[in-house]
Structure formats: structure tokens, C-alpha cells
Image (cartoon, rainbow, N blue to C red; front, side):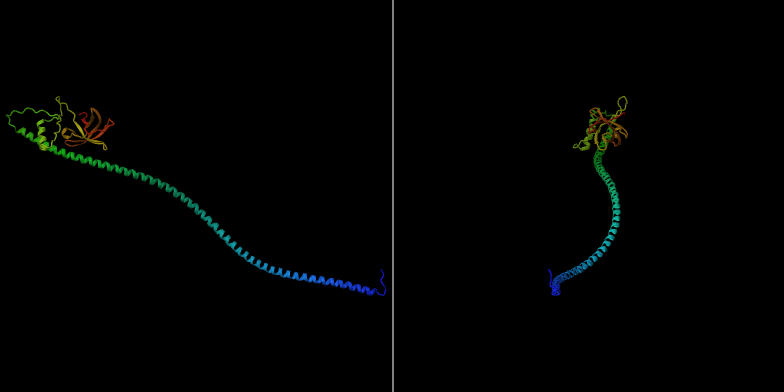
Length: 304
């Protein structure tokens, strides 16, 4: 389209103004928008600066904590090193204690065995002492009985000896012209009946009778020696000895051997170890019977 020639510069100027106004308006709008954006960016920068400051503070605090943690870590490492060394020493001490414990257990076992052995020996000693006390009491009772019996036998023996001496004196004092009295009948025990009766009367005054011990004839008619024959009156099982009612007055001597008979069978053999006038204590030498000698068994001299 062709423009008129006289109006072309004005038109161009108007167009330019219009364009410049549009551009200015657009620039103003854009500038306002940029200012708004700048304000927003500034606010963002302020916010970021505040956050940065806060982060710097937090970083400083964290750095302080890191240093503290490093210090603490160093201390913990030192403590760990000390604890490791202490643990090594404790392990060595534990090993030593284990060795000492094993040694103590072995010593304890040995001592316990010794205690058990000593306890057993003590119990055996107590049992032996108890048995010895019982045996001592038995021996004391047996000795007391024997002493009592010996006392009675010695008393009876003295009374009998006095009566026998009196009878001998009476017999000696008889006149020579008087005919001898008829021989008295021998008693079952080997003594004369009147003498036995007189001795019984003299011993107890008639209220108590005392038996005259049998008179042992040492030789028979051919002059051969006869064995001593007696009876067992006391038996001690614990100490294996017997007492025979024959003594030195009957020809018994220490070392004499007796056969102990029961119902004609030999049950034991004994040897005289202690002799009294009317008693003999004999130790048992052998036993041919499961039964032990008893009171009442016959004792006969062996090989007179």
C-alpha cells in the first residue's frame, strides 16, 4: 500500500512512538515483574543467609562436638589400651588362680584321703580300745572270781590242814598197846569217811559242809606213776585258758600238759602256766573239737 508522500515521516514517527510506547510498556511490566522477582530473590537470599548462619552455628556446634568426640575417642582408646593390658594381667592371674585351684583340689583330695584313713584308724583304735576295755573288764571279773575262789580254797585248805594235823596228832598220841581201829572204808573221793566227816564238821560247825579234796595216789600197786586227774572249774573263752581243780598238792607243776576230755573224747589240750596248792591255770594249746572246753570237762595229765 503506498503512503502519501507528505505524511510519511509523521506516520513513521507515530508508528515509532507507538512501538516505543509498547516497548516501554512492556519493559515497564517486565521491570515490575523483575523487581518483584528481585524482591523474592532478596527474601530468598535473606532466608538462605539466615539458614546459612544457622547452619554455620550448627556446623560450629557439630565441629565442637566432633572435637569433643575425638577427645573422648582418644580417652576411650587409652582406656581400651589400659583395659586390654589389665585384661591380659587378669587372664594371667586367672590362669595362675586356676593352677592354684587345681593344686588346692589335689591337696584337698590328698588331705581328705588322709582324713578318711586317720578316721578309719581312729575308729579301729576306738574299737580296739573298746574291745581291750571289755577284755580288761572280763579279765578283772575273772581275776576277781579266781581271787575269791582262791581265798575260799586257801581258807578251806588251812582248815583242812589243821584238822589233818590234829588227826595225825591224835593218831600219834594213841597208846602203843591199843589195837588199831579197823581200817575205815574209803570214800569215793579217795579219803577216809570219818576224816571227811570230821573235816566237814570242823569246817562249818555242821551248818556248812566242806568237801575234802580227793587224795591222789601217785603210784599203783606195781609202783607205776598215775596221771593227775581233775576237772575244769573255770573257762575263759576270750583269753583261751581254763582252771583245773588240781594244784601243787596233787603233783601239778608248771609245764604239765592236760588232755581235756568230754564223754571220753578229747576236745582240747592245755598246759599249766600257773600253779597254786589246789588249783592250776592252763593255757589252751590245741583244740580238736569245734566246741570250746566247758566247766565239768575232765582234765587228765598227758604222758605222766
